[in-house]
Image (cartoon, rainbow over all chains, first blue to last red):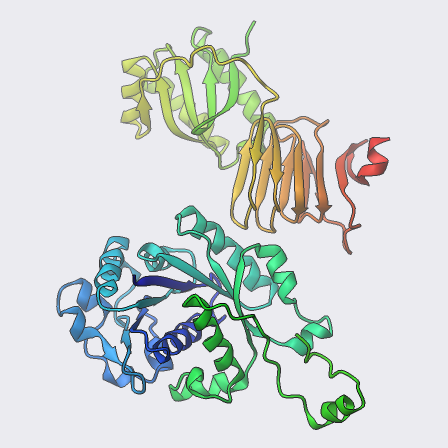
Length: 270
Length: 219
């Protein structure tokens, strides 16, 4: 039974596209057939994050408007043979597709893939509504910041109104050290407000910036903490029971010395 | 003697009942004073306008719409047994239904609305009577009641009790940390600093909104 999952957030810049690319890759590494769809028409960037920009010939709008077959628009990933990208059009806007088009497209993809992940645009307008139209489930991405959590709350209300079931939450870019100093919202603070199920926590990781710019997803890099977190989220998505861990930076030399004396390095717990 | 204007909550939301036999200008006058009094309550609301057996001309319907628009109240539909009234509404682009007077609905002005969920940012709960919420009211959400508001949870959004002008209305919550509180015509900003961690009640004391712990309030 294939699943169509939309990744959305309300606020921009919290990591929807990064999450989509990494979860798609992580699921494909498990041997599942995965399609990732960029629904941010007019502002595409999932292709850039995956390093597939220069292979685009046809896009989502071409498929919807019948200029090509779905197969022709799907781009195979560079590393993972089970992962495909359906890119957004860059020269059109949100009005180029309707919610019905997206439902039809999702159903077409469902026939060929185990997982279809849809990267939603930010906002609460037509683009977002189209992105969730064909979804069975929704994942909400937020960062532990008041503004992002506020927008996530708004989006959860809308997702529930569209009867897409109970969305699950990814908390992205958490800095455990700032949390332990009381300078950042903790996981509990966020969950207390949003009151939905947590599917994973991704730590702040500078490597994400470099891997994103290079067009290589973090899950392919075993040393990446964010990549490990996304791999675990993918396993939970697939139904495995994996406890949620927060991967902090490796304790530095100083912390290790303190550790030897039995003093716990701050922020490395959990 | 019945009121010329009555607001009731129903399955499809708010319903505005206008007396069907009184002189039309009196009905409009009564509506105007009701809308003036509850301006905050009606702002942005959508209602079904029920005129019963009254026959409205196109001009009279236009008058009604103008008055409602002035108070930012939107008519989602007209309920009327009169064919002329319905066509007047349709001509003005308002949906119209041949609804008979609701059968012997007892007048329950204190009827309460029960909400069992989290009220999230961007959501509005509006009711002419009391509102009870089991769950949190998050920042960015609005709760607007003609009567009292009870939140069995954390209140972080904006709440307006007594929005039709009742200064005796109160607001209570297990954790009272609102963005803003309004009771009748008064507005209070959230106090700076942390919540007390105890259930609290907000009410009008003299000419301002006071907040007190539940234990002290009940004495």
